[in-house]
Length: 472
Image (cartoon, rainbow, N blue to C red; front, side, top):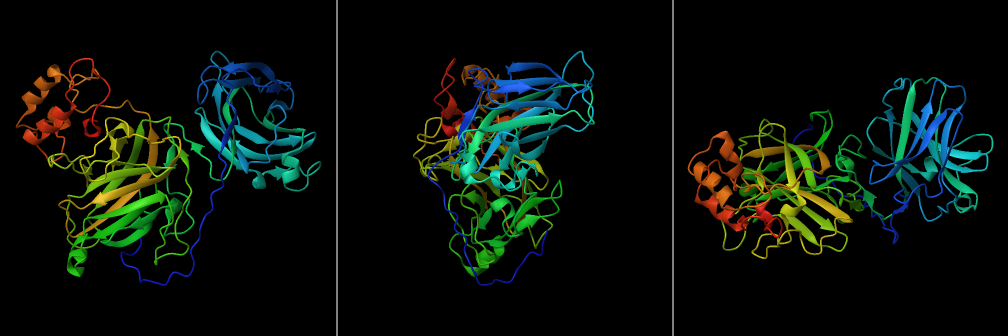
């Protein structure tokens, strides 16, 4: 972690990122079959529909890499890609039961071709689907039939096709290349995220002020940026000086925040000023998780008590947030206390409310929230009872597809009824491990406040939808 305090410097420039009016497009999804794709190559032993693609159905090409021949290739029908800046494909390489396992280097060559002219990039495959994106400007010409980067005119050539190739040289065994969701990438378009994908890992960042394009804000903020002492060696951090803020007399010494997208946040610590255009399609997941630690060893007098809150904003400005409190119901506190060791914090989309800090609560999913086009993600570190200096270290923001849990559903049958009330009753006034689940406000006990929150979720047997956000 860098030094805690940095001198303030003048902001020399601000970078504004313009968004185009068109979005990414799924060019081939294989739900209706081959969609014009062909599979060739002398080591081919099978090809065709893959029922378990990355998203629905996909395509598969099986090759015996011990057979003689150069390899195998898959080609799209002719495409016009002039409206896009790149392509993305989900792919994996898996062994085939009953046959010798693949050995060698699982390199997939992804690219474009016009006749013999080729422009390609490389991806290293694993046995799990991964998203591989290639900017057209970064594709390498073959050097013989194509000697320059592909041009905009060539992207609209009537003979242009997308190609996927695997070479046999140096490899052995039998393997199946599975692929799905061939997408044209357009500026301002959505990036469809697969559940389990780490969206922000903070391993690549343009400078130490804005790791992965994240920006930082809040009155008690003392420092922020890239954390080189995270679990995997790379992360992000933000330091809040609650006592310093009190001494300065600022009126809102109650939170600091970290965010990506949703407009520029120029800051005099850094040049340029933030990242604007994330455009994420999170609709395939049930929520987000993040690894967080409240490091009390940085600064002076740090104490626990801060809570973590999530907010997301979609393309038309609809906000969804974890409820901090509700007018008339002060016992509702759903942001989670941040521990002084690394832990995973999960936020289900159904647990988000469109209200910020008031009583206008939503019923279930936030009305108008477009998970297909999320433009901003924010984490807020709410002060609550924290004091001194807190360093919030965070990493690995991941789209999850865990089953959505109603925390008041004791027997996990999807509803909250009198059978669940018996469990709450048994835990009332106690706090063994099996009762911690009913601590709705995370204050270390199960009391009347928790019961009142549980009562908001009570709908009776066989009612599985229409719950208030704080029931999840």
